[in-house]
Image (cartoon, rainbow, N blue to C red):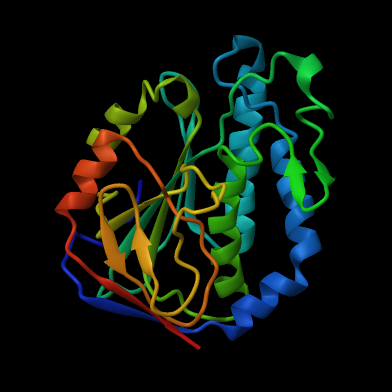
Length: 259
């Protein structure tokens, strides 16, 4: 079903290559990106409520089609005992590291509805913020990765790493079918590092976050050097015990950003 490119390997550094065209693409497509994110948020993909089962499936289908449109390959909507998993990849360089990106497209129930200033599934921009159920957890975070991949792929740039994406629809109900999926396809999902796009992303005053050359990528349990061209990122301030154990097993590495 999936590519086997990317058996775990140690690596000390990777160069992301010239990123100016991709950054320019993001800037010129900002309005399009925002409109697409709003479309994504409009799906009431509430995994905990049976009456929204069709909405969850519809959201998975939308995400799969969007993945194909931006240039991802082997896009698959994988049935489970509950809500489907969406898988996509772009693996063309066997000699380079493989990154597995995890996220989820299901959301929490929006009740109580009378506490919302605007309808939860009709996203609205107020000031510099987008309000809607899932805008932060986790559709916005997931979508940021998708748009970064699109920017590289649509500007003719070669991805500096192999990428595999795993987006589930049951995170908000405890991921009851994820473990079986991971065990079944563990070899196909092999990667050098996993990136979890499901973290606290609101920057807090007085808390460190890497945002420039020479910064340090810091979490509650691990830090790693970050070097290269200035790039804004959100800091992952906490994670689960499983993520901590995984992170501690990884080799230390540096990411070099080309200009």
